[in-house]
Length: 279
Image (cartoon, rainbow, N blue to C red; front, side, top):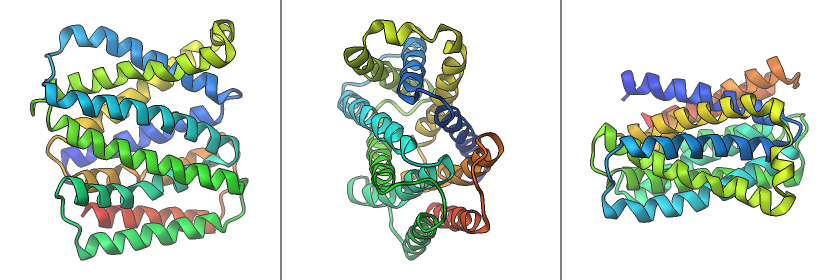
């Protein structure tokens, strides 16, 4: 697993941490997320004309995942409003591998071994250590970060099961991804309902930045969906969540967040736990 596919997942982890740093650094995160989702939906709408039709059995998974992704977006925005990137992001992403491993064990018949259990304990310990570190994170921020992690786990398991129903080819995985991203228009639709179309169109000068973040996000998760056709969901999710270390570094480098030895240790423990789950 830790070969070409593993290298691509690590690249996806870096890209994921990157677009999250862009989102956290935005003055209006809900607006930024809306434009990112619009970019993903528009790109998907163009792509579906060049991709094969999906099997009927994959459509329910796409529908469920699309709704869960809306909840994920809203929880993520709220978590970033109440916590630093280097704290909220590791809590959200670090809590998901153990939930994905458990969900894959219950619903997709994937093994949960002693090594997986050790990984779960390490991830949990890392999150506890991280939560005790100094940093701007409120109790509400911690709760929404954990809720974000729960939605990550749900849509990962759903998409892992759904893409396996899509046909088993790279083109089929791309088609599944495109139709899923088409549903991402729901997030900007909610924004327009709450704030109006004028508010959505106001930041014309920043659209290029938002669009770049959306494309990076689309590519990062597209890689994961493609890999889950044949790879174990728990292992791939665990490897992807090594992004918590990238996020801590990006938070320090670009957002001037405090990064002490305790945060670094906590992130490393989460990464080790994730790798143990993925081994």
